Image (cartoon, rainbow, N blue to C red; front, side, top):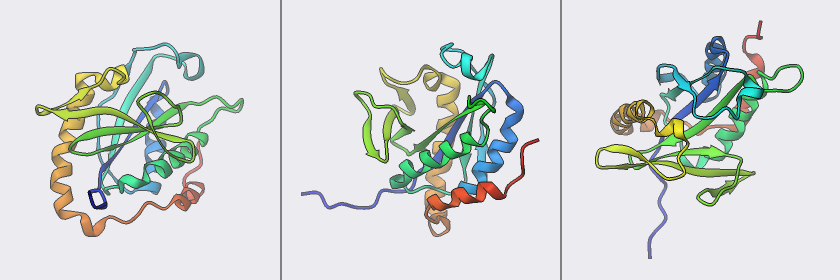
Length: 198
């Protein structure tokens, strides 16, 4: 019989895609109020594998990944996704369409897992309408895509960035354990105290 143990903390990574790259700074500030300071950010990547989102967001679309310094409890992924949904709502157009999309995920040395509100055969239900999507697995020195991995996350440039984060995560686990506080869902209220959009 295996004895349950708390999992090691993970690196929180939030993927953002938008047609309005000027929104990045304000979105990053809003996320930092929830999750703490940024640790790293990827370059902009072209989001070109599907035209599905262009009607809502416009085009061309671009993606960028942001990683946060404070490590996350893996059991908090559901609440993290609900919090990023609230951040998205701060950027809605007057008619209700979105201007940006946020994909939170947890990076561990073994895998990269995204949170989603959509069910599918490979997704495991967490709670509150949120599922865990096993997106990448670490094998043979790289993060490898799976048959269902979103094409943009399967790109080498994205996986290389996550591999860099993995190296930092292994070091951070040794030094930051005492600094990691639990994510508080009620911290969403802090978004109302930030800068108003112009």
